[in-house]
Length: 391
Image 1 (spheres, one colour):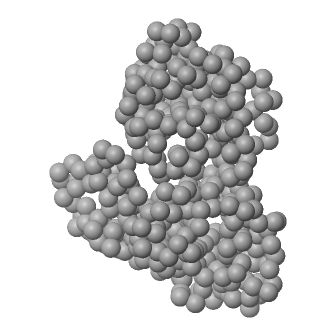
Image 2 (tube, rainbow, N blue to C red):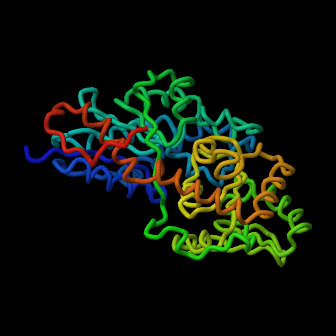
Image 3 (spheres, rainbow, N blue to C red):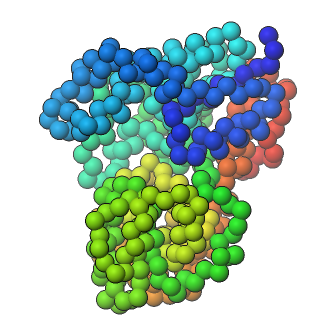
């Protein structure tokens, strides 16, 4: 039958995460060929079919009618109907038919990628739907899928041999909200999307430049208005301070604020090198890879105490965590850092050490291989991916 195959199932690009994970699986399991299936492309005809549009109307029609969801984004919800859920599974079965499957692996938890109960299957995800309930002040209907799809979601996790997650709040969600045995949930962290060829110490950073950096595609959801409000008050004590906004283009005109919008990844890295403090007081954040990139660049961080952020930021050690929406606490944290370039440097170094300990793709790859190998049918033919790194 030839060489075994590892099915790598994904939904589109998923930032640069899919490329990084695919590389780790290829390195960790050289005895198998990797079959990369983008289910958005493979199932595109059926996802855009009249039948699925009818199902979309049935499941989400009231949300669009009463403006709980925006109709102009209706096409995005075609992937999360109950019909689409089954379509994706059948598409993956067709893609692997006649192949000798070593195991299947999916990124994100928007579909069930298990081919059959006899083949080990693994999920690597940054979020569950129910974890969103933990974000204060969030209207559940703004993020909930249809009741039909929600009844199917637990199947994704319960059908997996092991669920790998980015952060411990997602581990908690799977165990407490989805009732999985703790042994089937493993925190594998993640790495940086930006290249790590240089340590930020090589940039000649000057923390005394007082440049606050925000990187986020959604100004409102990522806490941009709160940051702007705090920053304008910062100028009363530090009139030379600047705020740089990357990833979005809010309507902000101020001599001390640079709005760059969406820029290429190398340019983002340049802005990380120029910054003194990284601040994104987000109100909802499944993970936030940009925080990892800021830590690798020795930036002290000011963020909110939600989601995965307490994993990354130990308040008072490598940055400060504040309650979402608390502009006074945000102001106090920014002032503590801008008042003391020395504190910025110390916290930045501790963030860099934390990133090197947990947030590297080779580290994630070691965790994946360490837990996948024993679950395979023939663990005697192991090709370990480096030395497993303890957690």
